[in-house]
Length: 135
Image 1 (cartoon, rainbow, N blue to C red):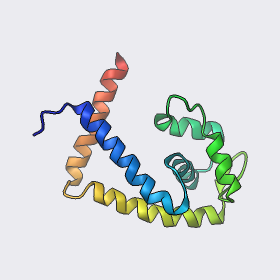
Image 2: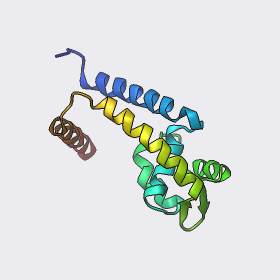
Image 3: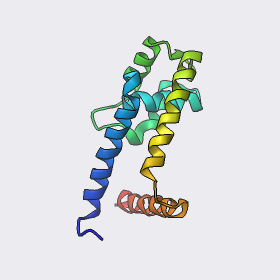
Image 4: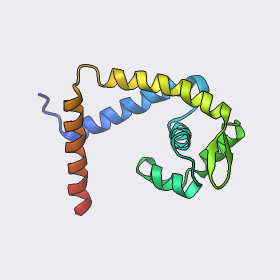
């Protein structure tokens, strides 16, 4: 077992996850945030305010809304509507193709890790977060 602290491994893993997802989405010139918006809308249409709420855990400190990402996806013809926003047939096609690549990346991430180990890890991280959120 490593002597490095958990914050090292969390930051290291986050950086690796970001880079891997960037490579996965590069073919469509799509960044992580736009993927999150597209994926969220594909799963459940909604307003910008609802997207902001759903994706708030992923927003950087300097990001207050995903509205610019919505407009970029609208400009590509992948999102339409206002209330609610929803993916277009072209957005669905792109999403579904990318989702397969995202699933392959997730499989690489969890190679050699059982479902139980994964669930335990997520549970521990969730409890650690709750501990710090309580102050």
